[in-house]
Amino acid sequence: MGTNNKQQRWARINERSATRGRAGSTAAPLVGQTYPENQAYGRLVPMPIALAESARNQGVEHLNQLLADLFTLHDLYNKHHWQASGPTFYPLHLLFDRHAEQLAEIIDRWRSA
Image 1 (cartoon, rainbow, N blue to C red):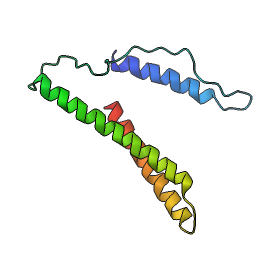
Image 2: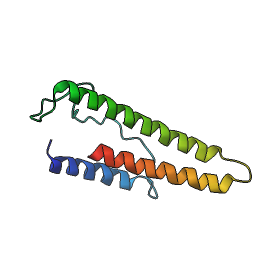
Image 3: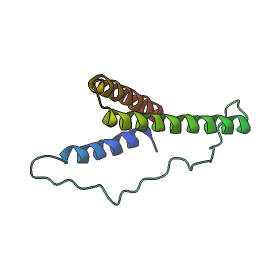
Image 4: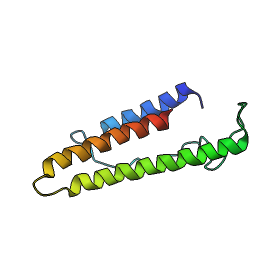
């Protein structure tokens, strides 16, 4: 799928999402969506680069683990963002919120690369 097709698809999704939550509309999930799979999990697409398949497999495994760890850390920051209490509530609340937002940006940049 070309970059232009992906951009058009996301533009349609964002357009539909933008209409949700307006006065008179009801919140409803977007159901029945089907999109082609870019690449099956655990499968490498042959590429003409100077890395052996075993090296690429190992790199993919490490990157997948790192991405999973980032998601876990993001979820932990969100959890503690809402569970902060006591005299340090507000500074911790802001700290955890800022860290969760920064991790979300990192994850988004990584996934779109």
